[in-house]
Length: 171
Image 1 (cartoon, rainbow, N blue to C red):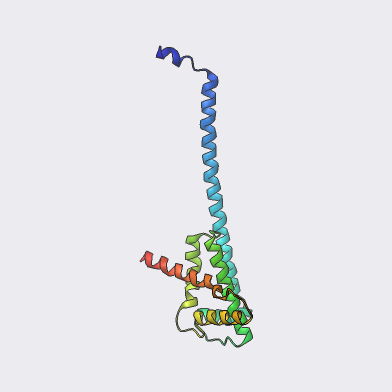
Image 2 (tube, one colour):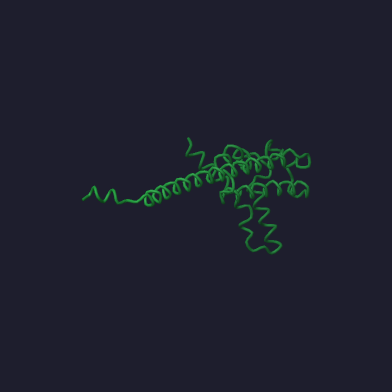
């Protein structure tokens, strides 16, 4: 009787089963390809973010900010040009934090390409220190009535904390 049931399976049933199997396989392949595509796009975008950051630093108009970041050259935050360049530099880091938070950039590439620069914000010996600048920026915001001034450049501080945490886990 069991043998009889086996022979009762129609070719249409076999074809439908194969169609389901092939459809599932194609869906799996499409999923894998989409994940690869997303990862490649994220990596390309991360590279562009790094390139944009480097272009900012290498722009002769931003020499003051570059020297503050990389050489610990002092700058005067009461000097408008110095202040504006430092503000632009911090804005770049804040954007990087937002992109990294939302998985817009590849985490490993971010760490490999940009962590050194972000760490440089908080390395000692700078005048003003990163925290001094952030405190000043928040003070100025409160003076003009911005109520959420404590959030200003919190992303830069968070980004730095994540880099240090990741570094401590790696060692």
